[in-house]
Image (cartoon, rainbow, N blue to C red):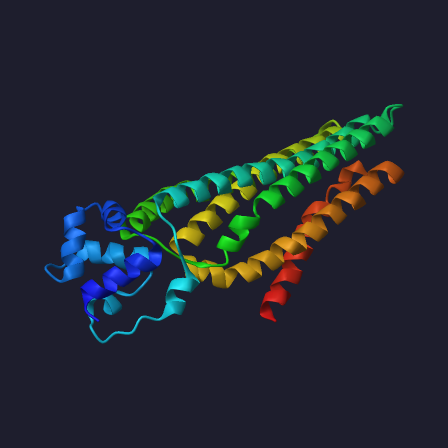
Length: 302
């Protein structure tokens, strides 16, 4: 088959009229008609757009003896500009919800800490449990809304050259700020540890030290989680195959933290309520991170 016959066949398989295809390629219907009848050929930038739109290779389009493999079209998902914008909007909203949900759980630990050794200590525990319950509800609702996009993130995608270039430029701008924000989050945690040492040494006030640490950790978690989700979003769009190959490992890591961090929070709460070890009981969190990363390291080696 020549180029014109292939183009006509692909257009009909997509259910597009000549007018609809012309609109997507930003050309006239007459131009599409000439291409299909063999009276003319598109320029290279249009051939690339046609290749992206129908998810076929340029070799297939231009070589008369090149066979069209159906699996190429079924394995890749074409994302136009609107789909890309919808996906990015969703991922950013998802990142904010998850970041604020996790942060609120850590921040709510300040309630039982502050009200410990008072007649309102049970109110502190009740407040903490209410916040955890609300956060879990948000996680469940958010998780349900991600099902369609979760399936998408396991697929190889295709997009136009111009959209890919635009995304790569946006990713470069994001990366220029990404490192600084992560460094800021780390600095906040380190500064809080310095504050804990000074408060413990010179006041001393174990409650205030623990509240300071938990508050700073919750702020840093918002930065880490939101920026990490946005970074994954850009990697999926601009480094699709690499992202899919690495996704399994990242999901294992995320699942592991989903188990270890709630356990750490439970241990900390029990230590605080039963033995009043709010300080230095907070050390359970950095220890949990260290152990989780160690377990993850050996899991990845396997």
